[in-house]
Length: 355
Image 1 (cartoon, rainbow, N blue to C red):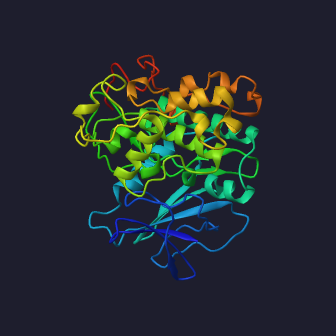
Image 2: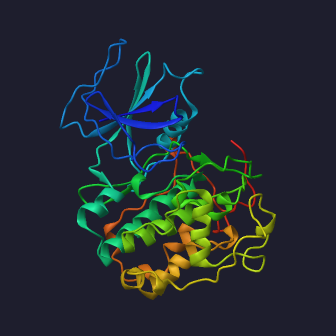
Image 3: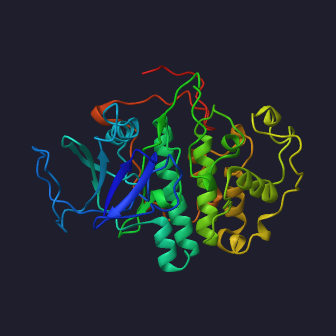
């Protein structure tokens, strides 16, 4: 299977055997499920007819970027993904093996991973308590590593989390990721598949930081526990109302400044928060400690939202055998390092030097 960028639709489609099909649960700016694979045999692309040939032992999947459909050369999403993945080296982040291009196409070759988390959950019919805990911990390890590098993924969802044969979870699809700095610039709010989108983005904020990833983490943990998306809205307003129905309609006392967000309306229905025990299966799989972790990741106010770094120390993971996981020292490629001493642990950087 080959993944190609369709510039006319400003999204991604998948095609196999010369036929087209829908790429799955993606937004107009999101990439397709990251586990779509095409094994390849590496030959240098020295002519325009170059195309990878099948080699089942090569162990990679291919992202094909059509350059002939781009008016201004290589698209920014591809450049962004290559740049970030060349810097990020962690067991819980998919490894970029190679990058090369022909006259009209750019190829990103990744390590081979069998399937994504969404497909894995469907395949096994729901995760065990131990698997939920293990995958949640690995998700936090990979996401925290990105955040320590000052990288916001911006599109965390089960389709972008890969599961290899050893049960290792890997973050993938960094096409929407951004490096962040202070002063916080204005970003587009059309990021993150709507089911996993933080309320500040749904309410129109264009200034955000790593707490948007932490919200997505909370949504994913809940989905792993119940095998059902937590906020499966069919539009932005439907999603925000689903959030309000479960967590209560926010006000200034729980989220200072919420009324000043562009898309917040004083006429919104006023719902009271519901307990996690009202969501079938959630308490059974997560227990009180896991539900507490979930509440901290799904805090309305981004400043109050739990960071992945602190989440790794939460009592929910106290009994987990952490020796099975391999975290990495936070050093960039080329032995460059980032000083994170200015991080307050909640997704804010007090001072920063632009690079």
